[in-house]
Amino acid sequence: MVTLKKQSKVMSAREAVERFVHDGDLITFGGFTITRNPMGLCHEIIRQKRKDLHVAVHSQGQAFDLLIGAGCVSVLEVAYGGTARFSPGGGPCFRRAIEGGQVQFEDYTNFQMTLRFLAGAMGVPFLPLRGSTETDVVRKWGIPPEIRKQNPKLPEKKLATVINPFDTSGEGNLIAVPALQPDVALIHAHQADSEGTVRFKGLTFTDVEQIKASKRVIVSCEELVDPETLRRDPVQNQIPFFMVDAVVPMPFGAHPTACYGYYDYDPAHMKHYAEMAKSEETLKTYLETYIFGTRDHEEYLSLIGEDTLNRLRADPDAGYAPGLDRSGE
Image (tube, rainbow, N blue to C red):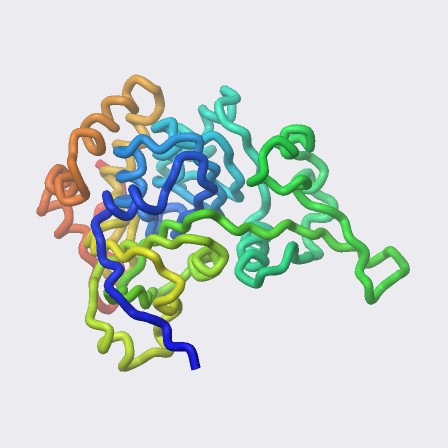
C-alpha cells in the first residue's frame, strides 16, 4: 500500500508564480467570462513580467484580456474572449492583438475546448465529436501547419476528420480535437485546505478538467479551511490534494469578476477597465495604477476600497448581490 505524503502547500501568490510559472509556458486558467477569473494570480504574473506565454482557455474574460494587454502572451487557443456587455465584440486587448497580428491565434468552439481538456485529463490523444463538421471552425485555421511544426506546444493539426470505426460507410465521419495538457493551471476556488483539496460551489465550468489535464496547478481560494472541514462532506470536493502544487489564500481573488456565494462582479471597475484598455497608452496607466503600483493583492484591494467590496458581497441565499447597481456608473 502506497501512502501519499501530505504537507502544507500554502504560499503567497508571488512564491507560487516564481516557482511554477515560467516564460514560454502553456498555461490555462479557470472561470468563465465575468465569473471566477483568477485575477490575483494573473496580476502577479504581470508583476513578474512573464513573457511568451501560450494561453489555452475555454471562455475567458478579464484575466485573459489583461494578460494579453500586458504583453505576456504570444499564442492563443480559445473559444471566446470578452467580458459580455462591457466589451462587446471581444475584449479590447484581445481584439487589438488579433487585428494587429501581435499574437498567433486559433479558435475552437466551447464544446471543442471542453473536449480538449477532457482528453488531456483522460490521457488520450484526442476525443471525437459530431458537431461543427460543416463550419468555418473546421475549414479555416488561424495557425498554419508550417508554423505549428515550429512550436512543440501546438498540435500539428488544429483538428482532423476521422472515420467512425463502427460505421465504415464514411457517412458517419467525426471531428477529432487534440488533447490539451498545459504546463500550469491557474484556478480560483471557493475553498481549499493547506494540503490542496479543493471545493467549488456553483458551476465548475471546465476548471476540474483543466486541473486534471495540467502538469502543475496553482489554486487561489476565498477561504483556507481546515482539512477536517472538507473531510466531513467529501462528496462536495472536486479536486484531491495530490493534484495541486500551490494553495494561495486570497479573499476577493477573482475581483472584478464574481465568485458565486461570496461576491458579485464589479460593474464600475469592469466598465473602467474596458474604457482604459481601448488604447495602449491608457492601458499603461491602468497597469501602473492597479498592478505595478501595488505590491500584492492586498494592496490592490485597498485601491478598490472596503466600501466597494462590501457592496459586492453576495446574499447568502441568492449567491449574488441582488441590489447591486449593474449600470457601471
